[in-house]
Length: 115
Length: 115
Image (cartoon, rainbow over all chains, first blue to last red; front, side, top):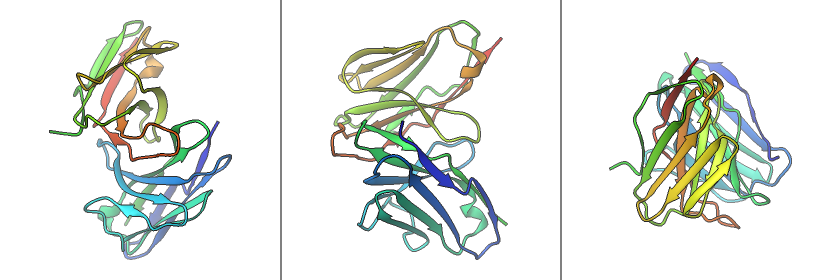
């Protein structure tokens, strides 16, 4: 089945630094990647949608200069949280759309803690 | 009105009982519907997908869709303690093929199955 590998699973960083999260589709080509954020006891909130080779489309209220998304290839998408602050601490999850079997495959998530 | 709304829960059922999870959505153009299970600290995993009106069964799980009423439900038969998790309803306008629109999630329903 389709697998999306997401790394790192956990990261702790200092306030003001940047953190990069990677999502790789291991056995399929992910033409579209979705990035979500989930705060404790809340549902998933879509941050942005990225298509391979195109600029990401950000949801209202999400700062594109703070959350940099790169989808340079069909198997790799990255989310960089720049100048992280404690309020950016959250669970970040990627999801790739699969062509071979219609569906959305989720990565395992990244727990970001900014101290 | 929320785009996707689930019964608030938490829902507690005894082992072996039927758990009923409900979801309503506001976007009449929605075409694809998904139920995900999410354990604490983990990313969502797909339980069922449904695209046409009626019932769809997979093992102990049955999804029901009524597009006229904008309603989708999930029944879990013979509930097990391992079913205890948060269940997320998600909808999208996409119908598969080459179009992959964003998923909109409900707030989730916490299910506890007690022995």
